[in-house]
Amino acid sequence: MYKAIVSSDWSECLAPCSPFDCISFNYPGLTTELETIFTQYTGNVITLGEAARRIQTLLQDGVTIEQMDAYLDNSFLTYTGVTELVEWCLTHHILFMINTTGMIGYFQRVFAKGLLPRVPVISAHPMIRYPDQASDPDHIYDLFETRDKAQNTAAVARRYEVSSKHIILIGDSGGDGPHFEWGAKGNAFLIGSMTKPSLDNYCRQKNIKINLRFGIDYAEEKEKDHQKEMQVNFGDLASIIEDILS
Image (cartoon, rainbow, N blue to C red; front, side, top):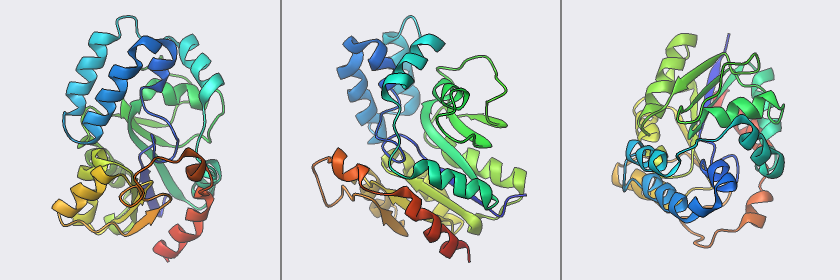
C-alpha cells in the first residue's frame, strides 16, 4: 500500500509552535512555566514523562474541545508548504506520519476542522484526548517518552511492511535524538528541520550523521527568526524525497 514512510515531528519542525501553546493560550498565567518545561525536555534535561507530570500538576481543569478550537481558530499555523508536502506524500503512496510530543487532542481537532490533510497515522501524547471522531487518523499511537517515537515508527513500518531503508525521519531538537539514533541504525534518511543545537549535539555525541539540514540551521544561527523560517518552503522537500527514494 505504501512504498515509504515519512515520520516527522511537528512543533518547531513543521509548525512554528510549541506543543503547549494550546494550554498557554487558554491559561496565559502558565506560559513561563510551560516554556521552561518545553526547553528542558527537548534538551534532554528532563524526561517527557516528568514534563507531563509537571504540566498535569499545573493544569487542573484540562483543555476542552471549545478551548482547543478557540486556540486553533486564533493561532493555527504551519510553515509554508507543509500542507502541500503532506498532500504530495498522500498522492504518491508515501505514508506521512506525524510523530510528536504534542497532544492527540490537538490533532483530532485539526483534522476535524480540516486545517490539515488527514494523515493515516499519528503518534502523540494522550494527556489531552477527545472522544473518537470519523475525522481521526486510522491509527493513533500513544507517545509517553521521546524514545516512543522510534518504537511507534517501527510499529507502523511493520504494519505496512516498509523497510527501514524507505523511511525518512524529520526532527528539529534533542527530543528527536533517540528517533534519529534508531533510524541511523537501520539506514533511514535523517532530515534536520530548523535544526536546534540540542539535536546537533545529540547526533554529534552519538556519531549520527544528519543526512540533510533543511530550513534554518540554528546550530549556526543562534537567534530565532520567525520571518526567515516562514520563507522556507516545505513543498521543496517533495522533490528531495523523490530523489531519496529513487
